[in-house]
Length: 96
Image (cartoon, rainbow, N blue to C red):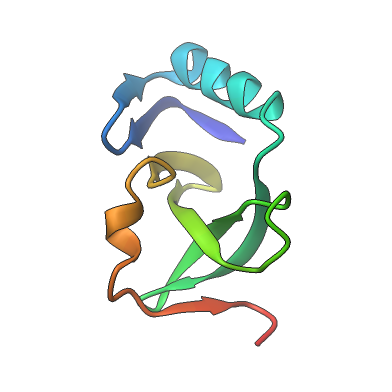
């Protein structure tokens, strides 16, 4: 489901390009236990919202924006490590 020339930006951390590099990103996050993902919106744009299930609240700790091209993921901007991007952002869960 990801394009061969996919681009990934983990804001404040790293940039990756290509299916091989970005596949490692998914593998790393598969091992992380301090996040739960939900679908929602950030400033009206569809997003994946990141919460910490260990905290016991629904506060959003970060988000990811995903772009699609020809039915494949072409670009990911991951704001997990850029919490300052949440300040002033309009965040809404998809089921609200």
